[in-house]
Image (tube, rainbow over all chains, first blue to last red; front, side):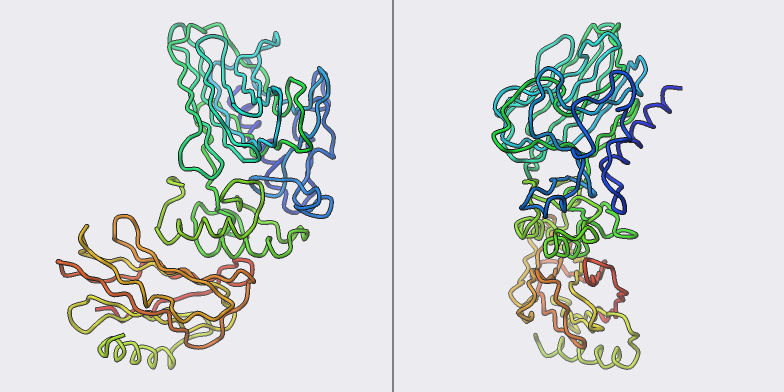
Length: 301
Length: 148
């Protein structure tokens, strides 16, 4: 049943970018070896903050866990993306991923969900100033995003005759307010289907201006929203895993990574970048401490 | 810290000194009457790098006022700390941490006093005490509650 396939998608994504504290970062959990598979990316495009001498010397930015996917140059019409081919003629699709904006100029397709004929059913673009989310009909949702900031993109799509929809939110840059809300409803899209997803530079030839964009924590499902991860929840659970709480354990874990960021053993397992600027430092602690002492739950951050 | 609080806290510390295990203990005491203030101290095992406590203020209202000036006033130079109140004025949280992952000294560690002014009679309840070791590792922690 297709539900299992989609559940498998989520697990594969977690293996790719998330739960790899004890192993090298890999992209092989995606579908690079089949015809029409991932394009323009290699093993070197997955990594952790310790790569290349650490965060200030070429290390990868990541949102959660150790690893992320990096794209730092265009590749003509081919693009640079990982491909998930497990969806099968889906009529309902929920997706979440984290995107680090870099300093692009020019338009990049950072996510596409396509049908078997290659038509974009869901399209997310970033032009360096705005992010846009669209589907096969209805209006395009466009809103401003900051440079060099992590954003969580959450989308829920459904096909139906007259009641199809694409809804969701984009939240990030350390703000409790959504950067954008997508609410495209009343669609007559009953014949649309989703058969694959592309994450990365799926299309476009933007100028990266000596920066990179990053992707992390892709999760897709059929019936339930994957949900946003708690920013600042660096650890605190069993074995240092994130526990959905913000407290002194998270600060302790963050300090350890700040002190020795080139030591893989110090990489936290959760989401340490509280202000979502791609850099783990004292400012993350400084902005998180008031949230802890105000007893603010993760859901309100 | 008023005399009543000092008395209760000192008595509690003595009791803990005779019963404490190798872990870390939070000792909280309130005034003998009125229950408008609580003091907090910790007895630490020398492995703690940071700690956090949350104390619920039962019976408060929007008009409840908190004096946090003497909360976490005596921290070592290796540590920073702050106390705050939740937006609904029901929880006081204290947070002590080190930006160098330095350990807090073993022994009695005074956390301070919080005074509460309210038109209602309030009481206090410890709802959380967390002690972090190196790199945020959870350490054993217990509460010695002398609150009325």
